[in-house]
Image (cartoon, rainbow, N blue to C red; front, side, top):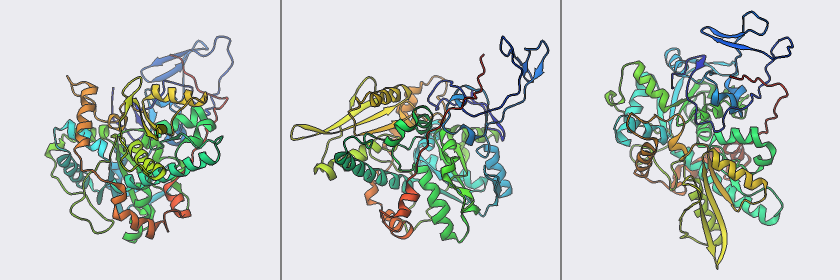
Length: 482
């Protein structure tokens, strides 16, 4: 069952969260009297009723915000309702209409510029849904957002490139640190671009697993920094005057955008104000009796510098989740072992969602990377780490089976089409996008120089990296047994 995000309540199949129901770790005080048998709950048409005392007493609705649910996959996975604030279709349309917004810190800002940042995975999802080419879907998506009132619609290649370059350098540093301190917790380096995986790690494995997770920000959050800082400066407005929306393949990205780490007290705003997914955009079209096919197309915007031709969605070498394993493997092979033509030949292990690639030099295995998609494979990976049996130097970890192209908020298969068939179609479409090499991106050199004060500066570390936090389970938990 999938229904629409409302301003306060969302009923949806949030199956991109990677664990089954767990106890809620948000402390919620419930006033009740002690009984020998425990509470008895009746589900009525108008809510839930405690009948332990022999008479019906309506229970108050517990309001949990997105920030409260951060790093908790329990209730979001299994509950029928999730209170979602500032991350809904209705909120987005309200901002378009009123040109003002209130963030989840309670700060109200007038909007001078509405910017939409588009990632490739949900765009391809809509292309498949409406039987369009990737180029047609992109242009029509831009046209639709601008018809609603967006000022700029951008692709995220520059942020994806920055994330890959930073992850490459971070791996080299971690590898060298491990050589100097074999007992350290430098390797394996685990990808950090999937917020579902990060939430699970923070909540379930805490301080044990967090040192292994890459500190490099996801493309969404790097794009947020670019928009709120570089673009605002170029336009002569404050960061808080920009309302920044990202178009993403999973609901977890809403949680990522809401993190305290990505809120600037100095600027009084988040890097990303709202996340909209493929499913939600399909619903927005349907609610207005429109089809993406009927939308007049428009070109992506390019506000950064001179560009050769109109911008477009791009792909990177490797998986449809961004190609982290492939890029870092090839970079490490060349810079650590002088292998400029290393072969990327993956071997499937228990299933196609857990595969590995190795580099041998002089008959010795010197690099071993893996891709682990889906919760079962993630659990196996973590257990190997805890037993000290992990053979890997790097793992690209994604919560969803098949990775981001199969994100939990991608458009669902139509009648008669299997999920596997749809994913295969999206993978084929992704492989046909223009290929880019991050190191060839001239804009990045300008950004490192003019915005970040150099590649290894403190500002670059602050803007392109983040930290993670173990979440302690409270002794007070809300458990509802059905």
